[in-house]
Image (cartoon, rainbow, N blue to C red):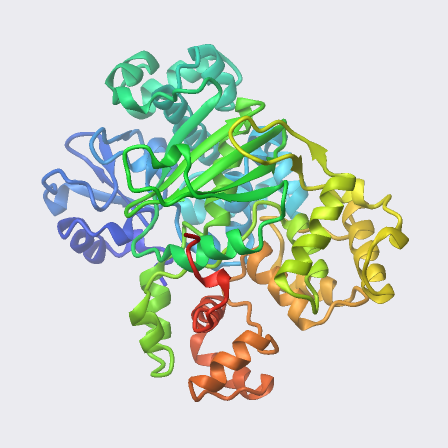
Length: 504
């Protein structure tokens, strides 16, 4: 684990001198002689070790008076994988800040969601990241502002409010302070091809740590896509100038409105095309797309651990960098997990499509065939159980789940406490370990969630000479911790199911 890596000066210096991109997002290098801060992989000549100081976050560098390097753009490096691995207060706080909660609800709203005092949260963030929630949210606002300045033709006043600034003046001051350039200078310097051709559409690149194996990631999303809400387009606007690989598209329910996103794999980034009804949702939309594709994972750490098991080593070597396909909406995924209990992928899609047609919010999609937002729990709470073409017990499971979600008794989100939420799910009627763990893995983002009772996992285990009974497999899988959710992806991938194949 890299926790507190910025305090290991010798290791940080080695990473900077070797320009090792694997450490981007783990720590930041501030250069005392120039007053700028960089990512470890900065292409510039590395400064002398005595001129380097290391910080755990971009916000801490900014607080200490350093400006972002114009060459390596440390503000755009992938987020720290730590927030994906850990379930403690700091990690849950960072996931909520990434989801824009501080901008919408303030630090008091953040604290209320987490059930701690603002002082406790500030103290823990300062101790670990060298910056409090306001500074961390400000660093994120600056990054969003830069993105909008460079990739859209929006007027600067619109950029300021879309990025979450309270005034144009604060926006101007922050951009100047963080990037040592005014907003208009940033726009002048931006590559001209970056501007979106379609008004209201933002095109950007989502970086990730290599390697990334896209087949099971996009294959899973495409094979389980709910008609009207998700689709795979074999040719897409993202394919301009590159080999056509297609794109996964879906609708997004967002705090201020809705959006449609198209995501397409590229060798060194994910091409992302966002159409938003309200530009203030940009930060949240990006954060949710990164979570959906598990882009902040540390594949080197994951694969190293799994490769140590001789049974898994050939699978990892064949296709390193598998990610866990996640979700943009935890409540939606929970509903879909119940619809998918003991039925085929095709049947689960049919059930979900019926719910969408009857209860989803209609949206316009000029570029494809998306028609609805997936219905929110409060819309589903009013559904007639008799209208559901499924066994009575599963109807009861679904109606109980949506009622609990709608009235707030059960909360699923980026800030969920994994063990507590899993226990709350298991207490619901019709929820067994498989349903609770698949929600923990794909909705809550627990990297250690495991599915020892899953048919595909047991079949793969048997073929590899691993124990195939749930209890014996769980014992053997202890060596894969804390990455058992990734082991599941490697095991599933031994099957010829469409979820493992990038659509043609």
